[in-house]
Image (tube, rainbow, N blue to C red; front, side, top):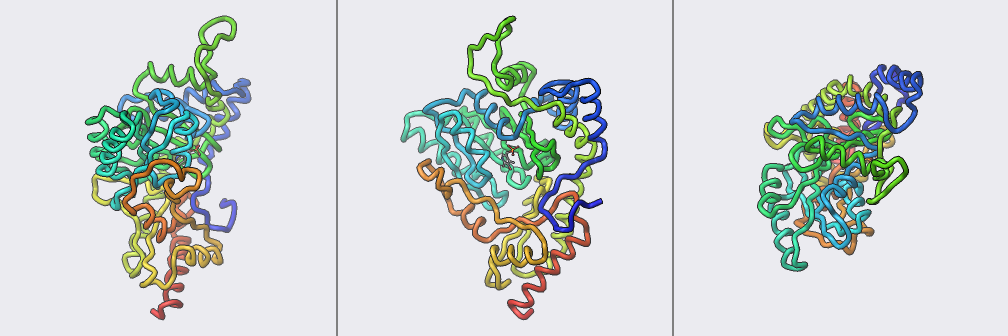
Length: 385
Ligand SMILES: *Cc1c(COP(=O)(O)O)cnc(C)c1O
């Protein structure tokens, strides 16, 4: 049964298998941040991700990004290149490490980091500071794969490791390979509104068993192997709870269905918007890209529709439909005002005309039709057509 009438962007949806794993945890008293569900969930994730990668389950996607930076040796005085068009959680961990984010704008096809601008930024930082940035954080915004081949080529040319923020892109693929497996490390999120949820949680995709052990060490307070508590490094309390991991194990049984549903909803929007002048749906640029369509996004041509994104947001709100402006680029955020930024206007112009529409597992065909009808009638009202 659907929990509420309001149509939400992406509401958590249980498979029905979650309670079994949670009950196991209670029965065996594994109510701690380690245990069979954590190991099982990691195994499930490793199988799903493929590419011989290892996965560490953590308390949040943000924690995963943070430990990715720790693994890459990012510290005080370093610069880290970060996609500007993203959620703040991509950039905040750079600051936790005492490093400075250097923001790079997007290209218009994938809305993700522009490979050309990335190279410009790298060259310019070297010129200005005398050293190369320590790492590159590339994001798969709304689940859309970035131009990762080109980004990796630039990164390798200058010997800079890539940390992929695949928090929104679980199951997305580029040329048949899962997002999060191209760079040195990749982060996933299982927050309440992501592709699957553990109520709150994340994971770091790592290259091998050795780095998995290192990440687990940092995630559990960096305790050295002594009978007493010995510490030689700064640690974190970032491990995933065995209860959360139980939810995760249940969610893994329905992940493929969730992804298929998001893609189905995108297809419904695609058909409908093809007939609406002035609204463009954000879609895979070519068949090399296979977005999970975590959220479906539209760009609004105000001259043709008669409304801008904020007016449409309010119109949808009156119909009890949740929608949301696109992520406001980090280079426009007051908190990052003093960070270097390499900008081409792409993310700012997307932010000024885009809107995210509901696409989660609870969104039915009828609800998509209802959303489309609200938009169509708003255009009729404004433009008399
Ligand atoms: C959700 C999200 C994160 C952070 O994940 P949490 O699990 O909420 O900490 C990071 N980056 C992006 C792009 C996200 O959307």
